Image 1 (cartoon, rainbow, N blue to C red):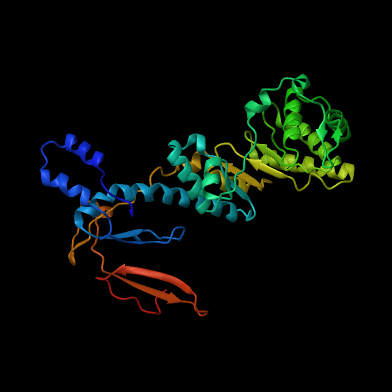
Image 2 (cartoon, rainbow, N blue to C red; image 1 turned 90 degrees about the horizontal axis):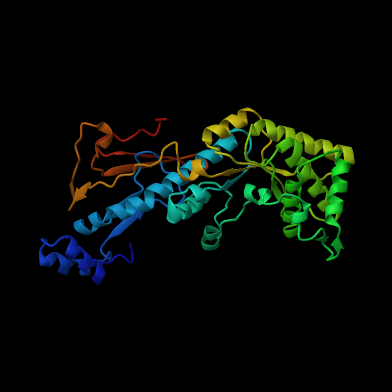
Length: 380
């Protein structure tokens, strides 16, 4: 708003678009700026209740009307995403998972790059812990988190695809990593697993030994993905590194998370170590608020959720529906009448009452129309 103006090429385009408009209109447009406008806004990130204005705009009538679409565009989607994110955070909290990590994974499903950036920013503001959107991280400082893809795992067919069989340990020495991994597989009591998947996990660990979090459902989660990851994690542990955990992206997430946690604990008990029990279990796969609530009821063992489509597209309610209405001109109220009650806009000289708790902190704000009687202090 502070930089709003019509440039010469804007005026020429409008002149072509509206050839019958008066010349005075085109002379007027370049003179416009928002120095005479005042905008009163809720603080970004604050809680706002239904029917409570997000913005109040004061200024010259025509200018305020020109701002309508831009302001609605800038407020509707971000507010919707932040609300959606907050509801998902509450769903985790209500299930007793207050320490659960929530990551925004929605860039590929968002409505274009601008929508993707807004979704990353405002889901973080709504309670998420990070994003897979690297540009959003660069521009805002949001934590950037992610895992490798199924296509990465599928690009390996056997150990022959590895460029090296060694890894550099924390002391800078070369270690025979492939041999160590298969020795770890035997120690854990696992037999045949998918060799291409194992090769992919080894390559990933060789590149990122401090950040190994493997996607384990490319072929068979329990028979191959988890054993391969655990062998990698144990081999890393033996040379001073610590793997982060695994990601589940399909199947019965609650059931699989409990099976995986059981396998982790059993391995620690068998080997007399404390390596696997507290490793992170990440889950993705079309997760929404209802899924979070249901997983909570099933007593899942998931530590982190990567949520994409249902977060950034808000499939439960694709649009927030904020409106921009004229309520007063030169001190005189205006009202829109409609047969639909929800579309009535009552002129608002609003009375705001704030009740305080016994410690002096705000307990509740009550906002009501001036035509209604003032509330009594004893009212609940």
